[in-house]
Image 1: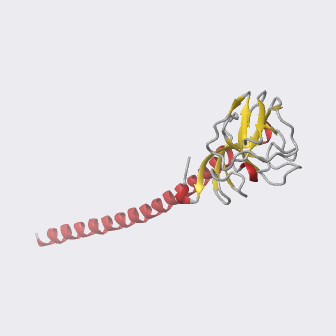
Image 2: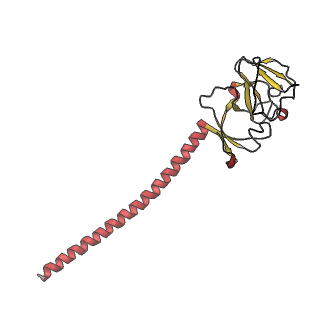
Image 3: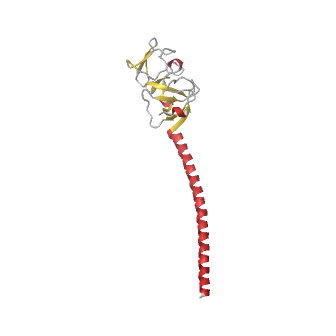
Length: 200
């Protein structure tokens, strides 16, 4: 009787030891599983960000005061070119060219076929004979460069101006001129920075 009890006790003790080892193996495996999950999540997140900002969005920085008060110097913006077609009033980023060495950020005032006229004495802009209500401008449009008005926007091009009209080099000047649609990097979608001025 006594012997059987001892054998039984030994059996249970061995079973407990086996159970402890199994638990220890499970814990080790679960730790590696957690590490693997973290690494996988980080890799997926990095790849997702890469894909988003390579194919869907770009991040650009504003340089200068030509878009004040809408955008300020050193603002950070996201720009999208996904199935984008320019529309009146859009703020777009235009790729650098031989004439200007950095990308520029301007507002679309005219599309292909539009007739743009500016009364520089009154500081107002006309599109197809209709005066634009431009609540976004910093100052009236009083500065004239070397382009004679009225002008018709050529096919496949846009006419752009900065919101800070008297401190903006734009389609009023032959240095910028009409913008070929193929040179548009995309439409400004979100202001990311400064954080307190986040805006869609």
